[in-house]
Image (tube, rainbow, N blue to C red; front, side):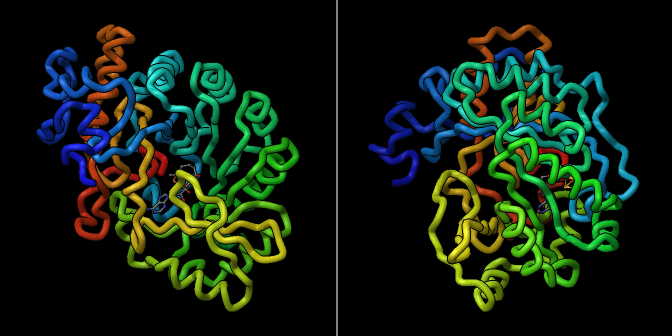
Length: 368
Ligand code: SAM
Ligand code: SF4
């Protein structure tokens, strides 16, 4: 049933379909200027106009990074957000606290590279303590994990995702401009610290690293990691140019099936990956296919950038700028209404295939 139909869960709750008047821009205005305020006032939780419940926030704590992955951040890039525009830890806690009161239970720390932001373990501990937040996870490139793994684990982060596109030193350097050893050391420190699961995220690119998918399966088997393959997405100029190396993961799966027996349908859940298990092992392999089989119908997340911009969709520019509201002294109740109103403009889906030119921001701004 479509939203807006009589009887649709969301239409019933909201009373009527919210008017979608394009991008919501409330910079410099008070909340009463929202033309979505009626929607906000009629809802008490985060359900978007398509009936999707939002219970997951991806929190980008920095747009900076110590690597320059070719599909993400341009070589030599330094046009970063000014520190005075970063949400402070206290501001982040306020926003995540409001999300927690509205039913969000899961938060992922991401970036840029989250471990370059000083005091991350302190932030993690305070977010874990917020009412409603019962799952705090981390996406990292692992270059600094050897020094921070223990502290982050003790702070309450139990699950981590680590980007790793290749196991070959020269190739790692070519893709990321960094050193593979640092990542491997970080991964081993994470294992020691007790993170479980540790998921390896590999962006598969034709002619770049697609010859390593079987090696990566063996590596993850050896270390008891979960493996996820990701299709390149046209985010920013770097992402768009990487799509010339795009590989449909259905092809990768078919290739793996020639060497491994893959049992489908394991690990159902809210996430975007479709999982299989390698028979006779504990290894799970996820396929994240935003291009070949998008998963927007079950999208349960929004993204908060380091400057306080709340992005409603990875592949669209619809957003709400929270920083001006926070710094104008918005109350907690108004903040909650602002979040609900923002959910009213969450787009139905990305258009990576139809309009690959449309997302100008880099993936590093919102953290994937
Ligand atoms: N720096 C951390 C890391 O690399 O895991 C967190 C941020 S990074 C932007 C999050 C994820 O986005 C990584 O798994 C990365 O491989 C993925 N990513 C970045 N640009 C991408 C693109 N154009 N297409 C597909 N995935 C991309
Ligand atoms: Fe940095 Fe992660 Fe982007 Fe690579 S994918 S440049 S590690 S933010």
